[in-house]
Structures are given as C-alpha cells and as structure tokens.
Length: 174
Image (cartoon, rainbow, N blue to C red; front, top):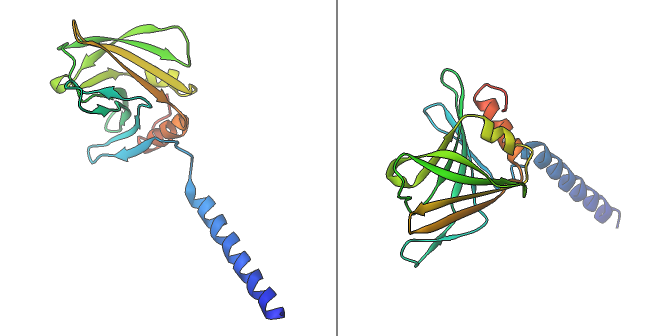
C-alpha cells in the first residue's frame, strides 16, 4: 500500500514538473498570429480573416490574410499587406475603408501589388493604431462593377506578435 502511494506521488510530481517546463517554454500568447522570419531580413506576422470571400467563379471561398511586416536591414521599415485570391481591377492605388473596434469608418489609400492580389500600406502608423485594438474591418472595391470585398480580423495576440517582430528587427514596436 505504501509503495502505491509513493508511486502516485512520483507520477503527480512528474506531471507537475512537465507542466511547469511547458509553461516556461510556451512564450507569449500570439492568438492566431503566425510569425515568420525570411532570409532577406524581413519578419512578418500573418492572420487569416474570420470571414470568407467567394472566389470570382463562385466555386470556393477563402479568407484574406493580413500581414504586418518589419524589414531589419538599414532603418527598420514597417508595412501592412492584405493578400487576396481574386485581383482588384485598380492598377496603382485603391481606397480602403477601415474600421477599428467598431469606430467610425475612415478611408486610406493602399498600393496595389503584383497581379492586383496584394494590397499594401507602408509605414508604422497603421500598425500603431492596431496594437491596442481587438477587431479590424477592411472593405474595398474589386472593380467598378465587381462589388466590394470585406475582411474581418480578430486581433487577439497582436501586441505580442508586434513585440516579437520588433525584437527580431532590433527596433521598438510602433
């Protein structure tokens, strides 16, 4: 009987030790953010939208991806990207309607990337306004007659992800 209680005590101690080790190694809670470092000195954090957009042919749906990036070579440079599966018809700039935490919508100019499937905004001011936010809603026109796209993001873990990006870029968070 004494041996059984001693074995239970050893098992309980081992489980507690493993839980403590895991808690120390877990690091910050990044929510659904995925942080990656590219070989070119760029560090990114990416997040899928909570909603789906229907592709141009109507067969499939996809979630747009919001990416925040910092380039460490030289002066760190911050940017935001919205990756789409369907191209917008604009060629250089597009007006993006932005709503942060249910505030009033405001418009920003974003650049249109390769093949119209990447919308980009340079600078740290956009990231700075998101660090303490919990929700982001982006809306844009695909084309004159093509309708609007909308991407809704749950920003849980964003401040931790931005902190991790900034540390990798050897700079302060925006």
